[in-house]
Length: 491
Image (cartoon, rainbow, N blue to C red; front, side, top):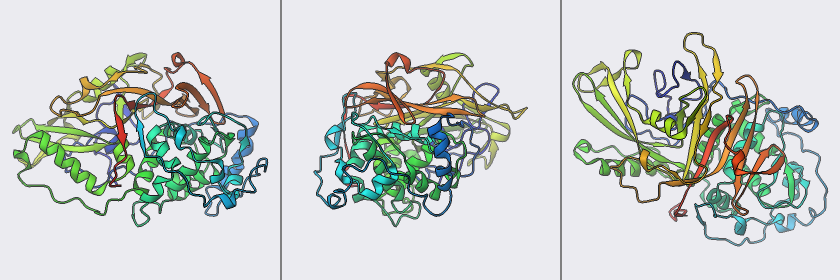
């Protein structure tokens, strides 16, 4: 796991510091300029949960609370009351049926589809189906809701966005992930997280349920991450970080536990070659579909103000965590520019210069060197005043492109990218409310219908693209255009 960077985080909103999880891969490389970390992702630790939510007080959510409480205990929660039993009796004999394998090649553009690889209804056994307590109803693939089990809308919002990531959905719907589960990885969860995530994705894309209850998925998450075990209000960004990490480690096929030592003469190499070697070293110990789909690369430059020694490192990131630069309104471009702006490290944030052999004031600069097929952008809406230690949420309207987000202006010109740097939005995780209480929803573009839908726990409704932007947008999910992604055959 990667340790949070020391000192106050970089690129914070004026007069406030971000107190959401300070993960090195999310917020950028640490100011220590140490060699690239040996872990692909930051594991969730005991951290303050800020962007909390409170379930809507309707009868369905209230009745589900007691069942969700049981998920925090070691035994599995009691099986929920099953829905109508029609069609269930023949399922046990159908589990072993051979399933058609569709090559995991899906376009990353707006028209990419997962319809052809949805696993059939008969792939669920009766026990699994009963525990999901489905509400039966013929719905378009991908438009099944998730019941709130008691303060679990943070989970529902995150899962719906990831489920609408076409290549990832296809990978789990086909069952291809089972070929890559690494039960011997000490950082993983013996494949439990990947298996239960697959069950939920299959249910969401089955086209037979109006909504289901993710009891077993929630219970599995709680067994491996105590912070998510009970009914406490949680932050969708923290949960997203855990889930991406959990899936990565469950599916990490890398045989190495540590990267090979770096070359001593690396400073004499051009940046293009150094970046290439750093990425290769990273992939030697991090080999999963999560790396291929979601991870990019930063170039971090530190210059000592005393002796002018320059340190350059290349580090992987999973998503961009951007400052919100205004209390009223701003543009995504403003947030990106603030994130990439050089930062002076002084006082308690001084950098240890290897040439001076002491802490020195320095200038730190981050450049985006490599962008992934799927780009996740998190807005730092939750801040804490350093003097009063009081937290607040920034209800700032951030204007961003729904289609044709061109990242070329924010990508290092030295990197010479091989892929398109233009992205389309396909998902948004929203937080409504304050730091004390609130509610999470998701806006997702269905890849089969190419239309937008609002996922509010078990309720799914169509929406217009003009309704997407709001002061509640928290995490944006973008897919790269004009590119076809092939899951690596080496996995």
